[in-house]
Length: 366
Ligand SMILES: *[C@@H]1O[C@H](CO)[C@@H](O)[C@H](O)[C@H]1NC(C)=O
Ligand SMILES: *[C@@H]1O[C@H](CO)[C@@H](O)[C@H](O)[C@H]1NC(C)=O
Ligand SMILES: *[C@@H]1O[C@H](CO)[C@@H](O)[C@H](O)[C@H]1NC(C)=O
Image 1 (cartoon, rainbow, N blue to C red):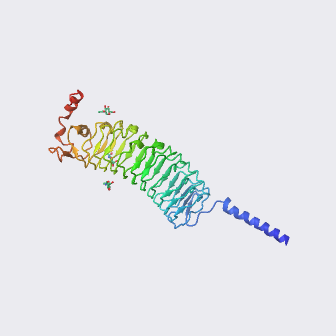
Image 2: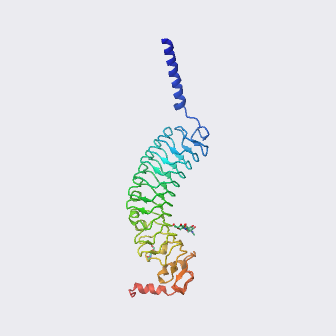
């Protein structure tokens, strides 16, 4: 009896050892329904009807789970996959990213979560993602970002948040993401960018805020940005651009998009400090004039159509630029009545303007 017990427990021990060997020591084989390449380095399970996240080994660098109805990312789902560099989970009907969802993914550089139904991201969801550089969260239902949610991502470079339901940005939203260069937040419902909301991402180069509900230019939030090269504000219902709006990054800003905003006026010093702008777009607004602070010397591409331009000497700088440029941007005079319907470029209203500018310099202007 004793011998039998000894024998059976020995047998059990060997059996368990063998089991452990196959499960943990030898590489896990290619998950069912997936394709694997390069010794399991790439595991492709695109649109395979998976309902659970498959286990992949440490050897796997890229895991493509697009178009599977996964619903959620459970805590520790990638515990065994610490070698992952690129994780694709677009179109997976994900509704939540739980705390510790990506625990252990210390080598992850690319994380694609676009086109899901994510409405909330639990604090700590992105812990461990210190190498993450590209985070795609566009086309989801995110309405709120908790303070510091991105702070583990000290290497984040490109953050895609367009087509969500964000209503405001609060101070500290991006704390820790000090290397962020591209921030896309087009087509949300943003009506407020609180002062301090962009303070931690002062190195932003590309900022897309088009298709939101900003009715006032968020001067305070923008004032910490230093090197913005491209700013898009199209479609926000702003009636005016205030003085010094772009001052803190004016030496870098090359592209400015202000189409379709119901803009009526630029403050006189709106463009102060702007010295590099090459591409300026202002179609579909209610502009009659351009401010004195706008220097045309760097501009190579301008669009101005669908505005009720007032063809008087205050547009003389624009006309001079047009005369010296090969471009022929559409811009039609709405006033004075003698010029109504004429292209700015063809209107005779500017023929005597140079003289006036000279006289103004001599201080004879009233
Ligand atoms: C202009 O903006 C309005 C309101 O934001 C939007 O509904 C419309 O589709 C936009 N039009 C174009 C041509 O972008
Ligand atoms: C516009 O910018 C150019 C180049 O920086 C400069 O030489 C010129 O004086 C500026 N013009 C005005 C009206 O400020
Ligand atoms: C001017 O800018 C618009 C918008 O970015 C772009 O579509 C167009 O190709 C540019 N034109 C030139 C001549 O660079």
